[in-house]
Length: 178
Image 1 (spheres, helix red, strand yellow):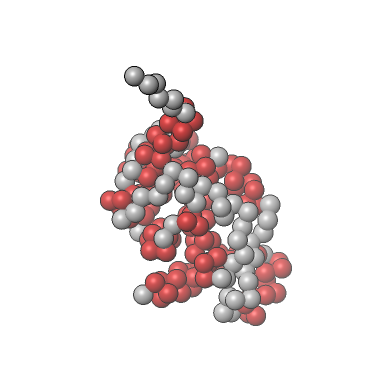
Image 2 (cartoon, helix red, strand yellow):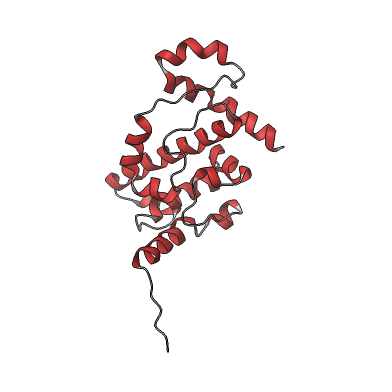
């Protein structure tokens, strides 16, 4: 009988992925691999996440809570105040990254420094990824249809300009999918 060598790190990643993505098939119709980045998600799944409907919100909370061993997304309201606040910060960061990915796919936004990072790693090591993302300001590209109208503001408040474009980006992305 041959002994099987099991990587503890791989076993840990697999367990985290099951906790984070185990309900995604039911919620979103897709379950990503453990090392998936947002840039690797199908357009339809990215769109669902970006719209932040009930199931998509729970799916993102599944990731946030799952990598911390705190259960499925539905457990968010039951967390103690400190854990709830931390989970909310990570959720908002991931939601931003999802929406920025939509804009990158439209060609409206230059990819940020965390674009290729795995979803699970961003959720686990949120503070480092948030700091890394904050070191490079977001930049709209000239492909954005109203670039001329926001170009001057981009030099002053790039983050605010990019965020103001999110509703328009979601609409354009949906139109591309339809």
